[in-house]
Length: 369
Ligand SMILES: Cc1cc2nc3c(=O)[nH]c(=O)nc-3n(C[C@H](O)[C@H](O)[C@H](O)COP(=O)(O)O)c2cc1C
Image (cartoon, rainbow, N blue to C red; front, side, top):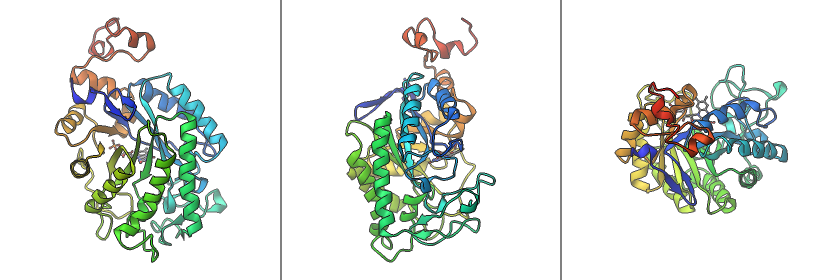
């Protein structure tokens, strides 16, 4: 059996296979609330048989959303919309449903007209907070340096959102500490130039993210998977480095986190990212796995089932996440099964109960029913 199709147990949950849908903003929410689009989009991915579905960056407070059309999990209405979404998604497949809890910090309030510029309050946006008053780019405004009160509010907002995620029926949480968003901003000297105990040394830069991660750990059930996402490098001199990422992941593992998704970049617009190469972040994932022992999810330009299987066989990662690959093909898992010679029945309930009668992946090669 290819490793991609070997189940993976994390705490009391089990992924039926190692293929994970990477979190991807849909910019389709209204006032933070999930809409029919989310049901259609995530529903098609669940029906495609994924091992885990990670729902897009979801703001823990309104000003933590990446854009006005991003999901939130900060009030009763958001929680109710998610509860309905999750309950319905669970009727479509066995995949674990994970939510990515996030705060965008200085990269919040993105204009949907351009996708790369700040939306001011007069046009429906909002003021920003971040570790230091340094703008993300010349298309953004300088944020307010967060006060101690801001930081304790954000920390509580992460914990409250985790409690809401539990009530809404999520199977797992992934805390977003990657891609230049708030927690990542604290880690990077390029965004964090604080003179207090949250800035300077690596120990100080990790302090706020670790407080948040600890607060989420404290309220999330012990039997459910808990993970986080990192940018293992800023790809920029003077920024966060892979050596620092190893130290950070070790600390988070000690807090009781089960998995990390190893991504990179997003801190500054002029980073030199070696894009274009398949699996360009896999070496970072491999190093984190080797040096920390935590379960690792690899991501980034992995779209081919053989490539995914090779990464797992070489022990470079434990799970494979695809973003654009799943947008291109919501039935990627089914097609991967076919490519790797695994029987995988059609997704509908009767076929799953009687896989010999309805061997979906094999029929995809040209048979008919
Ligand atoms: C449309 C889109 C939206 C994304 N939104 C998020 C997000 O909400 N959170 C996140 O951590 N990464 C986000 N990403 C990054 C993906 O999760 C993934 O890391 C990236 O696309 C690289 O994987 P790929 O080459 O398989 O697409 C997004 C990517 C795309 C294409």
